[in-house]
Image 1 (cartoon, rainbow, N blue to C red):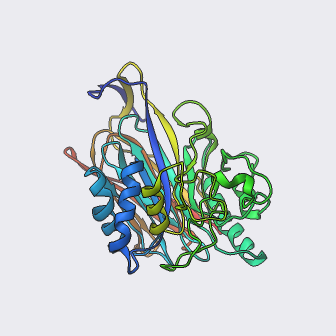
Image 2 (image 1 turned 90 degrees about the vertical axis):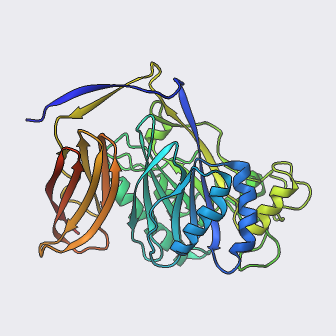
Length: 412
């Protein structure tokens, strides 16, 4: 029988009703490439102006690129920025940067598709202890039915994960979707309600037909250029490729909430349809930032704001177990992902290993120092064959070392 006690934690931080967080997505255009030393100055201008609390980027190509962007761009804005683990998948990749005074990084899980990985990042707010699940995507580019079908299949891989989750989970999907309109199959699949699940995504921007219409100019994110340089796309501002969509739980009140009307295609004043973002004048950001957006990438960033609700009394009740607890994986059997959850009696080091039936480690996640309380990890197993696997969760604290093993059934 599991026994629990209630720990009353008096927060030493100032008592405020809520914390408003800015979440940004930005396609960096083949970063670092051969021009990072030049483009870093433009990125610094942009990040100094926005100061995102959490930044997800696409088209980053290496660990060198992640480290370079952290130290040459983000840490010049604030020393508090840190990076999550980088996973080098096929083609270009995704990465996360975050304000370490506000969030703890938990994990990065790849979801395989036919072209590029979708990456699922987990971060935890340091005050409210709410976990936000962030999918960063870069879907198949270009027009044509074959490419539309490919994007739809990539979204299928994403929805297999979110449809398996219990209701009430806070998650968002963001990135470069390369979607051209509301009738495209990938967009429809993102938003489709499936009976018995809350795996769908909500788009706060209501648009019909083609996204490239002039009436939607204020929402366009590509291309801020009309001439070719640096390998980027041209054509002026006429596509809404970069988006942020969120779960039903984020749309609802309580916990993590989307701030209404906070979706911004940064630097877009709606007056540069089919034109360069830096053609004078830009009433959204001014000439210096407009120039930086023009020269940094062939996309402009998009951001939204979210409220993380705090306990208004300054007292937070955390139910802690008297011993190390690992819950049964859910769902199990599963395809392609399952959630492994735990509840820790104290702060300690947490590691997770996945074994096959031969006793070989096929996947691992070093969580590092993990706070007391509840947490979880999503094992995405689309790259693995059907069969039985074992998850060993290892917890090391000042009271000793503990581990627990779960049997997992992957059925394809």
